[in-house]
Length: 369
Image (cartoon, rainbow, N blue to C red; front, side):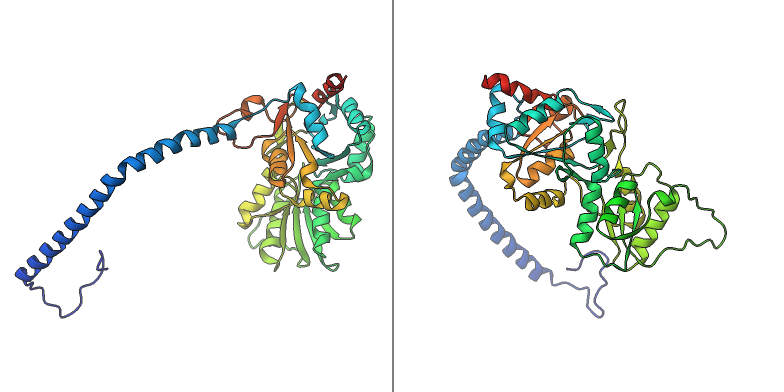
């Protein structure tokens, strides 16, 4: 191409045969004019057809966009059809069953009604601070009759993921997180360090300071940690960057969480973000909306995914989890998502139905009566 910055070839004369150049340019212009005339004639002949196709396509596109944007409130007439169409309900916990330590109105009665109708109920939470045993204790403490096999947490998902990959017994996992992850790793016989044991550790910087780390760490699991600190961030960073093949696993990427029913608190996404920033690595996510937990549950209970309804309060985790997995989806507005957010033009994740809270399903009995 002889573009800008290209050197001239040595020994090439700068003299030009102007008559030859003029004849060549005239020939090129004539050829281009001929091509342009043919294109213009063809365009004129097709213009009518092109305009008709274009004008017919536009309304269809508007209809398609309108259909995608449709957001349907769950009316009394929809409830029986929704419940009858599925065999299993998967419920998120925070914002659906409870907020903080407070049970949301109508939940016990709705659970009892669905059980009486023969529905399988499964409870899935992205919160990794408790193990399944810890969550079962919370359910029972709130007066909900739930069994251990109905509860799945992202702490369990992290342990199940490593176990499914035959994590070497001579290797270890470094944990940023709380007791839930540690208990679940113990449950599958995987050695670990970090977690609550590193809660109070600090870094003292001095000339030539070097932090040692265990070369046998083959995975770092990052879960929600109320005692996250610089020591943990640096230790996890060293393991991921310097131990060959070390996996980076996130229990979830939730932006916020419900530690209390008074406000939202920074979620695990903030902790994972710190490690992403220092390692320049993307984690393997095992909680919602990633498919690992759904695949695990469907295989364990031999459930068809098109016979599951996901009920959640978050668009970007619960509802996306359901949509990506081919489930029916019901958004409740008792947690993170507001109706304004749901109907915002910027939102592209739309549930099959939405309602104010899980207890709204109770009017199903009145409709049937």
